[in-house]
Length: 404
Picture 1 (cartoon, helix red, strand yellow):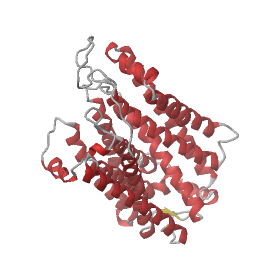
Picture 2 (cartoon, helix red, strand yellow):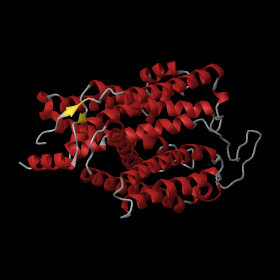
Picture 3 (cartoon, one colour):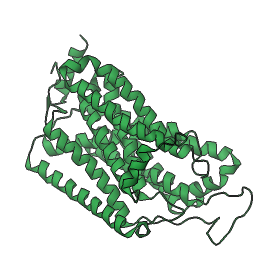
Picture 4 (tube, rainbow, N blue to C red):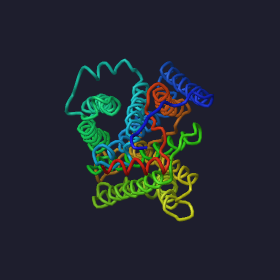
């Protein structure tokens, strides 16, 4: 394979079966939205203290992953790594659909989605939310042009500069998402500048884990071939990204522990926060980070496609847990209204806020993931996003040809 040949996703019965299943989940998500819209947010687990619930967890997870999944295209276009170039189109497509899935969940959870018109026509540029509207819409427009430059032969000379622009924009987008929490000084669990680079590291890990699962699904469901040479490089990169995420999460908590004002919330998350402490240490650190690292690098499991798939799934489980702890745990810890003083009132000031996710919230969030995957499947069926093969032999020929 001296040149990359692309093709569409084959329209087998398995394709329509999977697409139908995803469409059903999307419909269930839409039904959950209608239920919450009709009855009001009191049917959710959210309240006056915890105003960002499970749908926000899924929305932020998808938005962060959308930025990270583009990494596969950036490494090929911007950094000239030939092993990643054949997957650039798929990475761009998934980046757009994941962002659409995340934003759909976010909009449908607003209570009144029509208020989005107000948010898009009246801007308060002191708010990071106003900037994020431009970052999200700009990201989709830039990646769409980036895809055009990769798929249209006449536009190929512009592929590298567009890839560079998309790379810089995705860093800005993830910085903006992390800054939503980093700039919130009222919540002790947020208010940390390190959240911006931490979210960038998280995006690398979440996005690549999703991408690896998509590749493995194409292998198993559609007979597409991914050689061990490429898979080994991608899984090693995932290990690096998992370690980077762990490092930045540890850095955030260590810097918080240095400041006395954050000691209370750190004790809450790390020691006595109940479900939040469990999700942080057991699900994120142990199951979602250390275990996948062991699976990816241990000689007995590092070369197994099954264990690499399992590691990717565990990374995503840990990812949801981490975002849940950040968003929900940060709100559950009571506001510090008067530092150094004990506060109590009939409005539950000074009390740890309760929150339990309701079924409609979970279904709406899962519906957003299904929407992103369904949109990607339809696009792959219509246009040529998939390299014909990435077998070791074909990739070896392509890498040799790329040197000349």
